[in-house]
Image (tube, rainbow, N blue to C red; front, side):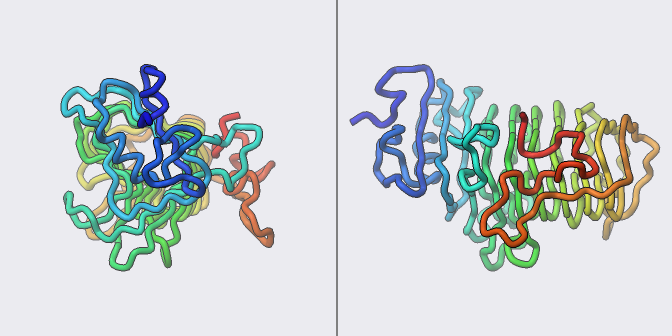
Length: 332
């Protein structure tokens, strides 16, 4: 029996299918014989040469991470082949429902001491990684104060695409310190929803070629974006940031130039800030605003009495302030 569909057909890509409900340990990973866990799929992909693109396709279900998962291949240098983890059913598919979105949850204890002790779900350890159509939720493991579903530690890596993903935390039960804590270049995030995270994104070293577009940040109780000292231009457009402590936080003593475009910042406690012993309001003199609105009320579609998530949950209700920006989980 071949290990993977692509190994049998000798294509130029390697694809692994995973099904948390119907898959099996020891399966081939083909579409008709899927693996049962994301952990097994990533372990398998870690052994690939790195000369060909890798795709892990996730069926609907809950994918529990008992340990930190490292996204890499066997290639130790110049590993530029694409590595994708994506849902089989994507939000813009005609038959998509929220229940079809793969849910990724870590139950690991503290598993990293990189810079400080924390817990990592997926550690991106190669360039050109793409994550699509996934829901990341917080970690309820006792003793974990800082949990990051997606981390990239190496500031020399390039290419990280995160698209049409949910990041949902709850500070009293399943805390999520930041949806992404990343270093390096080529970080592109679009059509994502960050809800109830302490910070939506933390971006620190060598941040160049960064973009955040068509995304929603709601209820970030520290900051929407924690941005390092980079003065490289970036794209920030068609986003909604609401009900947050601060919209944007930067290091103390550093005041790069930022440009925000065509977005709505409303009902936040603060706008620009920097970290000292606490978060302090910051000067906005190096800030360019193009088409930024700061008034209005954003109403998101939330679960009320119905047992299941509405089709467009956590997206703006029709007619809500900011709905015209087309921020949210859908591209179409």
